[in-house]
Image 1 (tube, rainbow, N blue to C red):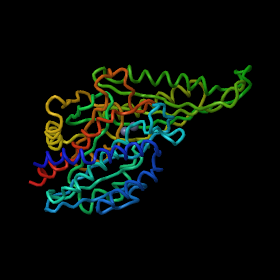
Image 2 (image 1 turned 180 degrees about the horizontal axis):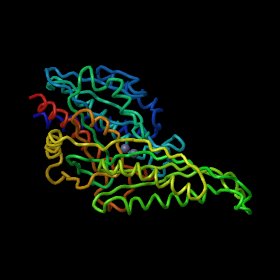
Image 3 (image 1 turned 45 degrees about the vertical axis):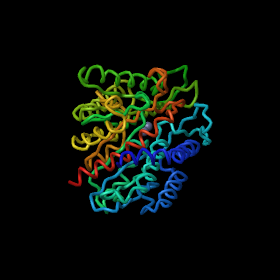
Amino acid sequence: MLQDLIETLEQKYRNTYLEYWKDLHRHPEPSYEEVRTSGKVRDILKSLDLEVKTGIGGTGIVGVLKGNNPGPVIALRADMDALQIQEETGCSFASENEGVMHACGHDTHTAMLLGAAHILSEIKDQIKGSIKFIFQPAEESSPTGGAPGMIRDGVLENPKVSAILGVHIWPTLKTGELGIREGIMSAASDRLQISISGKSTHAATPEFGIDAVVIAAQAISSLQTLISRNVSPLDSAVITIGKITGGTRYNIVADRVELDGTVRTFAPETRKLLARRIEETVEGTVRAMGGTCEVNYRWGYPSVMNNPKITAIARNTIKKIVGEKGLYEIDMPNPGGEDFAFFSEKIPSAFVWVGCRPQDKPAEEFPKLHNNRFLPDKRALPFGVKYLCQVALDVLEEVGE
Ligand SMILES: [Zn+2]
Ligand SMILES: [Zn+2]
Protein backbone atom coordinates (compact mmCIF):
# COMPACT_ATOMS: atom_id res chain seq x y z
CA MET A 1 0.00 0.00 0.00
CA LEU A 2 1.22 3.50 -0.82
CA GLN A 3 0.74 4.72 2.74
CA ASP A 4 3.05 2.00 4.09
CA LEU A 5 5.56 2.83 1.42
CA ILE A 6 5.51 6.49 2.51
CA GLU A 7 6.10 5.38 6.13
CA THR A 8 9.12 3.34 5.07
CA LEU A 9 10.56 6.04 2.83
CA GLU A 10 10.02 8.71 5.47
CA GLN A 11 12.24 6.69 7.81
CA LYS A 12 14.77 6.21 5.04
CA TYR A 13 15.05 9.99 4.46
CA ARG A 14 14.51 11.18 8.03
CA ASN A 15 18.15 11.90 8.75
CA THR A 16 18.57 13.57 5.39
CA TYR A 17 15.81 16.12 5.88
CA LEU A 18 16.60 16.65 9.56
CA GLU A 19 20.12 17.57 8.47
CA TYR A 20 18.64 19.98 5.90
CA TRP A 21 16.64 21.54 8.71
CA LYS A 22 19.65 22.01 10.99
CA ASP A 23 21.69 23.47 8.16
CA LEU A 24 18.92 25.91 7.20
CA HIS A 25 18.44 26.83 10.84
CA ARG A 26 22.13 27.60 11.17
CA HIS A 27 22.09 29.83 8.08
CA PRO A 28 18.87 31.86 8.20
CA GLU A 29 18.29 34.58 5.60
CA PRO A 30 15.69 37.37 5.77
CA SER A 31 13.01 38.07 3.16
CA TYR A 32 14.27 38.32 -0.45
CA GLU A 33 17.80 37.47 0.67
CA GLU A 34 17.25 33.70 0.62
CA VAL A 35 20.19 33.20 -1.73
CA ARG A 36 22.05 30.43 0.04
CA THR A 37 18.76 28.80 1.00
CA SER A 38 17.33 28.76 -2.51
CA GLY A 39 20.69 27.62 -3.91
CA LYS A 40 20.55 24.63 -1.60
CA VAL A 41 16.93 23.91 -2.52
CA ARG A 42 17.78 24.15 -6.24
CA ASP A 43 20.69 21.69 -5.90
CA ILE A 44 18.59 19.16 -4.01
CA LEU A 45 15.66 19.38 -6.44
CA LYS A 46 18.04 18.98 -9.38
CA SER A 47 19.65 15.94 -7.76
CA LEU A 48 16.14 14.42 -7.70
CA ASP A 49 15.79 14.99 -11.44
CA LEU A 50 12.92 17.41 -11.12
CA GLU A 51 12.34 20.16 -13.68
CA VAL A 52 13.65 23.16 -11.76
CA LYS A 53 13.01 26.86 -12.37
CA THR A 54 14.80 29.52 -10.35
CA GLY A 55 14.31 33.25 -9.88
CA ILE A 56 10.53 33.03 -9.66
CA GLY A 57 9.31 36.10 -7.77
CA GLY A 58 12.83 36.93 -6.60
CA THR A 59 14.64 34.04 -4.94
CA GLY A 60 11.69 31.65 -5.39
CA ILE A 61 12.18 28.17 -6.80
CA VAL A 62 9.82 25.66 -8.29
CA GLY A 63 10.45 21.99 -9.03
CA VAL A 64 8.03 19.87 -11.04
CA LEU A 65 7.73 16.15 -10.49
CA LYS A 66 5.94 14.41 -13.33
CA GLY A 67 4.29 11.20 -12.28
CA ASN A 68 4.45 8.26 -14.66
CA ASN A 69 0.67 8.31 -15.05
CA PRO A 70 -1.51 11.07 -16.50
CA GLY A 71 -3.50 13.29 -14.16
CA PRO A 72 -3.93 16.80 -12.79
CA VAL A 73 -1.29 19.13 -11.36
CA ILE A 74 -1.24 20.13 -7.72
CA ALA A 75 1.25 22.19 -5.71
CA LEU A 76 2.88 21.95 -2.31
CA ARG A 77 4.23 25.22 -0.95
CA ALA A 78 6.90 26.05 1.65
CA ASP A 79 8.28 29.44 2.62
CA MET A 80 12.02 29.98 3.13
CA ASP A 81 12.66 33.29 4.90
CA ALA A 82 13.81 34.04 8.44
CA LEU A 83 13.31 37.00 10.78
CA GLN A 84 15.51 39.80 12.03
CA ILE A 85 15.79 38.69 15.64
CA GLN A 86 18.71 37.44 17.70
CA GLU A 87 18.39 33.72 18.47
CA GLU A 88 18.49 32.65 22.10
CA THR A 89 17.51 29.01 21.93
CA GLY A 90 21.01 27.86 22.84
CA CYS A 91 20.61 24.86 20.52
CA SER A 92 23.62 23.17 18.92
CA PHE A 93 22.65 24.37 15.44
CA ALA A 94 21.76 27.94 16.41
CA SER A 95 21.92 30.76 13.86
CA GLU A 96 25.36 31.83 12.72
CA ASN A 97 23.92 34.97 11.13
CA GLU A 98 24.02 37.70 13.73
CA GLY A 99 20.55 39.13 14.35
CA VAL A 100 18.73 36.76 11.99
CA MET A 101 16.85 33.66 13.08
CA HIS A 102 14.35 31.11 11.83
CA ALA A 103 11.88 32.16 14.53
CA CYS A 104 8.79 31.33 12.44
CA GLY A 105 9.89 27.80 11.59
CA HIS A 106 10.11 28.35 7.84
CA ASP A 107 13.31 26.27 7.98
CA THR A 108 11.15 23.32 9.02
CA HIS A 109 8.72 24.02 6.15
CA THR A 110 11.53 24.01 3.61
CA ALA A 111 13.15 20.90 5.11
CA MET A 112 9.84 19.00 5.29
CA LEU A 113 8.99 19.84 1.69
CA LEU A 114 12.45 18.71 0.58
CA GLY A 115 11.86 15.49 2.52
CA ALA A 116 8.55 15.06 0.70
CA ALA A 117 10.30 15.71 -2.64
CA HIS A 118 12.75 12.87 -1.93
CA ILE A 119 9.96 10.47 -1.05
CA LEU A 120 7.54 11.37 -3.84
CA SER A 121 10.36 11.24 -6.43
CA GLU A 122 11.02 7.69 -5.42
CA ILE A 123 7.41 6.63 -6.02
CA LYS A 124 6.78 8.61 -9.19
CA ASP A 125 5.86 5.47 -11.10
CA GLN A 126 2.74 5.37 -8.93
CA ILE A 127 1.82 9.07 -9.14
CA LYS A 128 -1.16 10.04 -11.29
CA GLY A 129 -0.40 13.57 -12.40
CA SER A 130 2.25 16.11 -11.46
CA ILE A 131 3.37 17.81 -8.28
CA LYS A 132 4.87 21.29 -8.15
CA PHE A 133 7.14 21.96 -5.21
CA ILE A 134 7.00 25.69 -4.55
CA PHE A 135 9.67 27.28 -2.36
CA GLN A 136 8.63 30.83 -1.72
CA PRO A 137 10.64 33.81 -0.53
CA ALA A 138 9.61 36.68 1.73
CA GLU A 139 6.56 35.35 3.54
CA GLU A 140 7.41 37.76 6.36
CA SER A 141 7.65 40.87 4.20
CA SER A 142 4.20 42.26 4.86
CA PRO A 143 2.37 43.99 3.28
CA THR A 144 3.52 42.67 -0.12
CA GLY A 145 4.68 39.16 0.75
CA GLY A 146 6.55 36.82 -1.53
CA ALA A 147 3.60 34.87 -2.92
CA PRO A 148 2.24 37.59 -5.27
CA GLY A 149 5.60 37.85 -7.05
CA MET A 150 5.67 34.11 -7.68
CA ILE A 151 2.09 34.17 -8.91
CA ARG A 152 2.93 37.07 -11.29
CA ASP A 153 5.88 35.07 -12.56
CA GLY A 154 3.48 32.27 -13.46
CA VAL A 155 4.12 29.71 -10.75
CA LEU A 156 0.51 28.50 -10.96
CA GLU A 157 0.61 28.16 -14.76
CA ASN A 158 2.40 25.92 -17.29
CA PRO A 159 1.35 23.41 -16.21
CA LYS A 160 -1.74 24.88 -14.59
CA VAL A 161 -2.14 24.02 -10.91
CA SER A 162 -5.60 22.96 -9.77
CA ALA A 163 -5.07 22.91 -5.99
CA ILE A 164 -2.40 23.98 -3.52
CA LEU A 165 -1.49 22.74 -0.07
CA GLY A 166 0.62 24.31 2.64
CA VAL A 167 1.57 23.78 6.27
CA HIS A 168 2.82 25.85 9.19
CA ILE A 169 4.65 24.43 12.16
CA TRP A 170 2.54 25.26 15.24
CA PRO A 171 3.80 25.63 18.81
CA THR A 172 0.48 25.52 20.67
CA LEU A 173 -0.38 22.12 19.18
CA LYS A 174 1.41 19.04 20.49
CA THR A 175 3.79 17.01 18.39
CA GLY A 176 1.65 14.42 16.63
CA GLU A 177 -1.31 16.75 16.26
CA LEU A 178 -2.32 18.30 12.94
CA GLY A 179 -4.79 21.19 12.93
CA ILE A 180 -7.30 22.13 10.27
CA ARG A 181 -10.36 24.30 9.77
CA GLU A 182 -12.66 25.03 6.85
CA GLY A 183 -12.97 28.69 5.80
CA ILE A 184 -10.95 31.47 7.44
CA MET A 185 -7.62 30.18 8.80
CA SER A 186 -5.75 33.41 9.42
CA ALA A 187 -6.34 37.10 9.86
CA ALA A 188 -6.06 39.72 7.18
CA SER A 189 -2.84 41.54 7.95
CA ASP A 190 -2.36 45.16 6.92
CA ARG A 191 0.47 47.59 7.55
CA LEU A 192 0.03 50.95 9.19
CA GLN A 193 2.63 53.69 8.83
CA ILE A 194 2.04 57.10 10.35
CA SER A 195 4.33 60.08 10.35
CA ILE A 196 3.55 62.93 12.72
CA SER A 197 5.08 66.36 12.34
CA GLY A 198 5.28 69.05 14.98
CA LYS A 199 7.79 71.81 15.63
CA SER A 200 11.03 71.55 17.54
CA THR A 201 12.06 73.89 20.30
CA HIS A 202 14.01 73.87 23.57
CA ALA A 203 12.71 71.23 25.97
CA ALA A 204 12.32 73.89 28.67
CA THR A 205 10.06 76.07 26.54
CA PRO A 206 7.49 73.68 25.01
CA GLU A 207 5.09 76.57 24.41
CA PHE A 208 7.20 77.60 21.39
CA GLY A 209 6.96 74.19 19.75
CA ILE A 210 4.56 71.37 18.87
CA ASP A 211 5.59 68.15 20.57
CA ALA A 212 5.33 65.24 18.14
CA VAL A 213 6.13 62.73 20.92
CA VAL A 214 3.17 63.79 23.05
CA ILE A 215 0.92 63.79 19.98
CA ALA A 216 2.11 60.30 19.09
CA ALA A 217 1.36 59.04 22.61
CA GLN A 218 -2.17 60.42 22.35
CA ALA A 219 -2.67 58.97 18.86
CA ILE A 220 -1.56 55.49 19.97
CA SER A 221 -3.96 55.52 22.92
CA SER A 222 -6.84 56.67 20.69
CA LEU A 223 -6.13 53.86 18.24
CA GLN A 224 -6.67 51.28 20.96
CA THR A 225 -10.16 52.64 21.63
CA LEU A 226 -11.12 51.69 18.07
CA ILE A 227 -10.77 48.06 19.06
CA SER A 228 -12.83 48.46 22.21
CA ARG A 229 -15.43 50.92 20.82
CA ASN A 230 -15.75 50.31 17.07
CA VAL A 231 -15.33 46.55 16.77
CA SER A 232 -18.20 44.34 17.89
CA PRO A 233 -17.46 42.24 20.96
CA LEU A 234 -18.47 39.24 18.85
CA ASP A 235 -15.85 40.01 16.23
CA SER A 236 -12.22 40.75 16.93
CA ALA A 237 -9.32 42.77 15.62
CA VAL A 238 -5.86 43.91 16.68
CA ILE A 239 -3.94 47.14 16.20
CA THR A 240 -0.31 47.01 17.27
CA ILE A 241 2.19 49.81 16.89
CA GLY A 242 5.40 47.81 17.09
CA LYS A 243 7.89 50.52 16.35
CA ILE A 244 8.26 54.21 17.19
CA THR A 245 11.08 56.43 16.05
CA GLY A 246 11.33 60.11 16.74
CA GLY A 247 13.19 62.97 18.31
CA THR A 248 16.85 63.84 18.16
CA ARG A 249 17.93 64.76 21.69
CA TYR A 250 16.65 64.53 25.26
CA ASN A 251 16.41 68.28 25.62
CA ILE A 252 14.75 69.16 22.32
CA VAL A 253 11.00 68.93 21.75
CA ALA A 254 10.66 66.42 18.89
CA ASP A 255 9.34 67.72 15.59
CA ARG A 256 8.82 64.32 14.02
CA VAL A 257 7.71 60.83 15.05
CA GLU A 258 7.19 57.80 12.86
CA LEU A 259 4.87 54.99 13.93
CA ASP A 260 4.97 51.61 12.29
CA GLY A 261 2.41 48.95 13.04
CA THR A 262 0.01 46.31 11.88
CA VAL A 263 -3.75 45.80 11.80
CA ARG A 264 -5.29 42.32 11.95
CA THR A 265 -8.93 41.60 11.17
CA PHE A 266 -11.07 38.59 10.27
CA ALA A 267 -14.33 39.92 8.84
CA PRO A 268 -13.77 41.84 5.59
CA GLU A 269 -16.25 44.58 6.76
CA THR A 270 -14.24 45.13 9.93
CA ARG A 271 -11.10 45.41 7.84
CA LYS A 272 -12.63 48.23 5.78
CA LEU A 273 -14.14 49.95 8.81
CA LEU A 274 -10.84 50.03 10.72
CA ALA A 275 -8.89 51.34 7.75
CA ARG A 276 -11.26 54.32 7.63
CA ARG A 277 -11.53 54.91 11.39
CA ILE A 278 -7.76 54.73 11.90
CA GLU A 279 -7.24 57.51 9.42
CA GLU A 280 -10.02 59.67 10.90
CA THR A 281 -8.86 59.11 14.47
CA VAL A 282 -5.19 59.82 13.89
CA GLU A 283 -5.87 62.87 11.74
CA GLY A 284 -8.38 64.25 14.25
CA THR A 285 -6.06 63.71 17.23
CA VAL A 286 -3.05 65.22 15.51
CA ARG A 287 -4.97 68.22 14.22
CA ALA A 288 -6.47 68.89 17.65
CA MET A 289 -2.96 69.10 19.07
CA GLY A 290 -1.62 71.39 16.37
CA GLY A 291 0.43 68.92 14.38
CA THR A 292 0.17 67.46 10.92
CA CYS A 293 0.38 63.87 9.82
CA GLU A 294 0.41 61.40 7.02
CA VAL A 295 -1.41 58.10 7.49
CA ASN A 296 -0.42 55.35 5.15
CA TYR A 297 -2.70 52.33 5.43
CA ARG A 298 -1.21 49.61 3.27
CA TRP A 299 -3.46 46.70 2.40
CA GLY A 300 -1.55 43.52 3.07
CA TYR A 301 -2.30 39.83 3.26
CA PRO A 302 -5.93 38.78 3.01
CA SER A 303 -7.20 35.87 5.11
CA VAL A 304 -6.17 32.31 4.24
CA MET A 305 -9.40 30.63 3.12
CA ASN A 306 -9.50 26.86 3.30
CA ASN A 307 -11.63 25.53 0.43
CA PRO A 308 -14.37 23.09 1.62
CA LYS A 309 -13.55 20.29 -0.84
CA ILE A 310 -9.77 20.40 -0.44
CA THR A 311 -10.16 20.80 3.34
CA ALA A 312 -12.30 17.66 3.48
CA ILE A 313 -9.63 15.70 1.58
CA ALA A 314 -6.88 17.10 3.81
CA ARG A 315 -8.87 16.24 6.96
CA ASN A 316 -9.07 12.63 5.80
CA THR A 317 -5.36 12.63 5.08
CA ILE A 318 -4.68 13.90 8.61
CA LYS A 319 -6.72 10.98 10.00
CA LYS A 320 -4.59 8.56 7.98
CA ILE A 321 -1.37 10.07 9.38
CA VAL A 322 -2.24 10.72 13.04
CA GLY A 323 -5.67 9.12 13.55
CA GLU A 324 -8.76 10.79 15.02
CA LYS A 325 -6.74 11.44 18.17
CA GLY A 326 -4.20 13.60 16.37
CA LEU A 327 -6.75 15.54 14.33
CA TYR A 328 -7.15 18.98 15.87
CA GLU A 329 -10.22 20.92 14.76
CA ILE A 330 -9.21 24.58 14.92
CA ASP A 331 -12.09 26.56 16.41
CA MET A 332 -10.79 30.09 15.94
CA PRO A 333 -8.72 31.43 13.04
CA ASN A 334 -5.26 32.66 13.89
CA PRO A 335 -4.72 36.42 14.32
CA GLY A 336 -1.37 36.13 12.56
CA GLY A 337 -1.14 36.93 8.85
CA GLU A 338 0.04 34.36 6.33
CA ASP A 339 0.75 35.14 2.70
CA PHE A 340 -0.30 31.66 1.57
CA ALA A 341 -3.58 33.64 1.44
CA PHE A 342 -2.60 34.99 -2.00
CA PHE A 343 -2.49 31.42 -3.35
CA SER A 344 -5.75 30.56 -1.60
CA GLU A 345 -7.38 33.56 -3.31
CA LYS A 346 -6.45 32.12 -6.72
CA ILE A 347 -7.05 28.39 -6.48
CA PRO A 348 -8.64 25.89 -4.07
CA SER A 349 -6.34 25.24 -1.16
CA ALA A 350 -5.92 23.89 2.34
CA PHE A 351 -3.49 25.15 4.95
CA VAL A 352 -2.73 22.95 7.93
CA TRP A 353 -0.95 23.42 11.27
CA VAL A 354 1.67 20.88 12.28
CA GLY A 355 1.98 20.66 16.08
CA CYS A 356 5.55 20.92 17.40
CA ARG A 357 5.24 21.26 21.18
CA PRO A 358 6.92 18.46 23.10
CA GLN A 359 4.40 16.28 24.94
CA ASP A 360 5.75 17.24 28.38
CA LYS A 361 5.74 21.02 27.83
CA PRO A 362 2.64 23.00 28.88
CA ALA A 363 1.44 25.35 26.11
CA GLU A 364 2.03 28.47 28.25
CA GLU A 365 5.68 27.58 28.76
CA PHE A 366 6.60 26.69 25.20
CA PRO A 367 7.97 29.68 23.23
CA LYS A 368 5.70 30.80 20.41
CA LEU A 369 6.36 31.84 16.79
CA HIS A 370 8.54 34.95 16.40
CA ASN A 371 10.03 34.42 19.86
CA ASN A 372 13.83 34.25 20.06
CA ARG A 373 13.62 30.98 22.00
CA PHE A 374 11.24 29.24 19.60
CA LEU A 375 12.59 25.85 18.58
CA PRO A 376 10.22 23.17 17.26
CA ASP A 377 10.36 19.61 18.55
CA LYS A 378 12.28 17.66 15.91
CA ARG A 379 9.85 14.74 16.33
CA ALA A 380 7.21 16.97 14.71
CA LEU A 381 8.84 17.01 11.30
CA PRO A 382 8.07 13.39 10.32
CA PHE A 383 4.34 14.07 10.73
CA GLY A 384 4.59 17.09 8.43
CA VAL A 385 6.57 15.15 5.83
CA LYS A 386 4.16 12.22 5.80
CA TYR A 387 1.19 14.55 5.64
CA LEU A 388 2.63 16.46 2.66
CA CYS A 389 3.32 13.25 0.72
CA GLN A 390 -0.04 11.68 1.49
CA VAL A 391 -2.13 14.80 0.92
CA ALA A 392 -0.48 15.32 -2.47
CA LEU A 393 -1.49 11.82 -3.53
CA ASP A 394 -4.97 12.11 -2.03
CA VAL A 395 -5.71 15.46 -3.68
CA LEU A 396 -4.35 14.24 -7.04
CA GLU A 397 -6.64 11.25 -6.76
CA GLU A 398 -9.74 13.32 -5.99
CA VAL A 399 -9.31 16.33 -8.25
CA GLY A 400 -8.43 13.93 -11.04
CA GLU A 401 -11.86 12.32 -10.95
ZN1 LIG B 1 6.08 34.50 10.83
ZN1 LIG C 1 5.42 31.81 9.25
